[in-house]
Length: 215
Image (cartoon, rainbow, N blue to C red; front, top):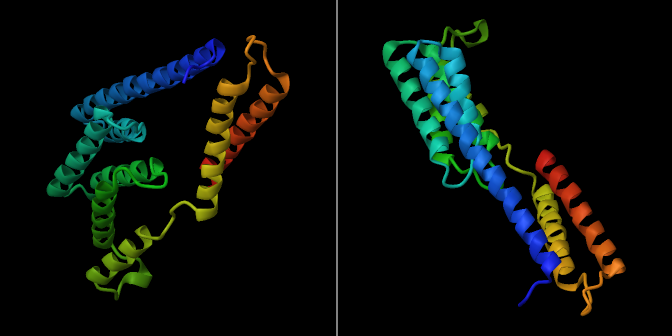
């Protein structure tokens, strides 16, 4: 299958954009990881955890700095628990949890880390001084209640997942069809075909963004 030269240039441009975006994610996640480690080494807990959380948010399959940021957060959280600094431990575990949820889509890339964070947050919350309403509730029961709240299902709505699939089909399908049929044998653009596929790509992109925001 041979692509039209214009279509090949379009495909190359798309590949370049994705490559640049991926490189930026890697660079920014490494910078945030280094900043977080440096801040924690100086005893600056809040900015250190924030920087590590930012690195953990910058998910890209195969990104080693993303995984290192999670490791640093979990290690710091456990160390703070050992030292009895529950507030710092909670801060770090919540950063793990928020990062895992922020990078979910149809699946959660860091499911095991999310599960660990939920359990540790529930335990630490149960050990905090109880509210007047919780005064007569055993610690184990408070932990169960906190854990149940953390497990509330906030997965993507199935309808919006379907919209996401349709959006991708319009976006990618329209671009592919334009690449294959947008020019005739004399290399003249077929205005009607390009207009229709351009509209399909535009609608697909809009639906894709809407589905990501609502799913």
